[in-house]
Figure 1 (cartoon, rainbow, N blue to C red):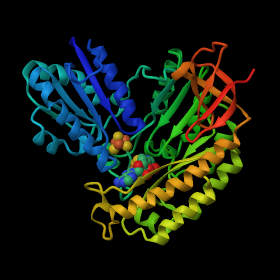
Figure 2 (tube, rainbow, N blue to C red):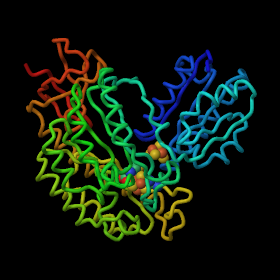
Figure 3 (cartoon, rainbow, N blue to C red):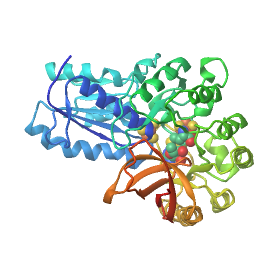
Length: 441
Ligand code: SAH
Ligand code: SF4
Ligand code: F3S
C-alpha cells in the first residue's frame, strides 16, 4: 500500500481519542503521506471526534461544513470522520454530509490506510463501525509525536461497561476489555528505547484492569511489573473509578517510586440521591473513605476530580452537597461540566431536566469555590523545591514540565538541561492554573 500527498488531522476529546489520533497519524505516514497544516490543501482530511457532550458532538458538523468548499475545488480529497461521533451517528452523518467519504468507528482504526486507498481508487463511500472481539489490532505501537515527546499514553483497557446514566462511552467505545498484561509489558520497554520517560496508562476504569480477563483485579500487579522497567521514570494512570478504587492502589502509590502521586477520581456529585440516579455505584461517604485511605497511604498525593452540575432532578440541596464536598475534600483541581443530554443514555428521558440558566449559575459557583482552593494550593507551594520532568521548551525561552503531582511548571534555566531530564525547580509563583519557578542549584 502506498499513497503520496498530504493528510490533515483535526482532533478533540479525551486522552484516549488523542492517542487514537497519534495512531492514525502513524498509519497515514506508513502509507507514505505527510502531515499538512491545513485542511484546505490536504488530500486526506481526518476529523477524530468526541460525543461526550452536545457541544463536542456539534464541532464535527461545523468542521464538515467548513471543508465543503475545499472538496469542491479538489474532488479527489478523501474526508474521514472517526471517533465517538462516527461510531454513534454514522448513519446521520453520512446522510447529511454527501462529501463525507469514510465513517470510521472506534474499533476500526487499523483499517484506515486500506480504506483510504480503496476510496481514492473507486470513489465509493464507506461506513465501517463494527465492534471487534479482538482488541490487539487497536493497540499497535504508536510513535511519539507532538509537544511532549518523552511522555506516552499506553492503553490498558478499551471501552466501558458501567453505563452511568449520563454517559455515551459504553455505546461509542464498546464494553470494557482489558489488554493482556504481556502485551503491555512488551510495548512499554519499546517506548522507553525510543526515549519515553513517562507513561500514562489509559482506561475508563483502570482500577478494574484484568477483571474481564478472568483472573481478578490485576491493576496493582501491572503497576509493580511496570515499575521494574529500566529507563522508565514515571508512571501515571487515568481514570480511576471510585467504586473500584481500593486500598491496594493507594498502597502501591505510596510504595512504588515510579508511580506518581496523583489520582484522578471523578466524584460527579456530592449528593447520594444524585449519585444513585447517575448509577455511579458509591455513596458520598464511601467516596470519602477512599480519599482518607489515599491520603494516609500516600501523603501529599494530589487528587483531582470531575463534577457534573444540573443532572436531571438535581435540587438546590443536592447541589449544595456538591459545594460542601468541594470544600471538605479540597481537590487540587477539578473539571466541571453542565449536564448535557446524550442520545441513547438513561438520563436522556429522565424527568425534571434542569434549565440551562440554572446549570450555568451552578457551574459558575463551582468555579468560584474551586479556583480559590486551587490557587491556595499553588500559593502554598511558593518557596518549595519540586521534582520536575522537563518535557519541552515553551514560550520566551522558558522550559516546562510537570511535578510528580501533575502540576504544570514553567521555569527558567540557563544550564541547558535536555528534554527528559529530571530537575529540581524552586517555585517562585503559584499562578491560577500553573506554577512558575527556576532551576534550584
Ligand atoms: N470514565 C471516567 C470519565 C469519562 S468521561 C469516569 O467514569 O469517571 C469524562 C467526564 O465527562 C466524566 O467524568 C463526566 O464528568 C463528564 N461527562 C460525561 N458525560 C457527560 C454528560 N452527558 N454531560 C456532562 N458531562 C459529562
Ligand atoms: Fe462513562 Fe461511567 Fe464509563 Fe466513566 S465509568 S466512561 S462516566 S459510563
Ligand atoms: Fe469523548 Fe469518546 Fe473520549 S466521547 S471523552 S472521545 S471516549
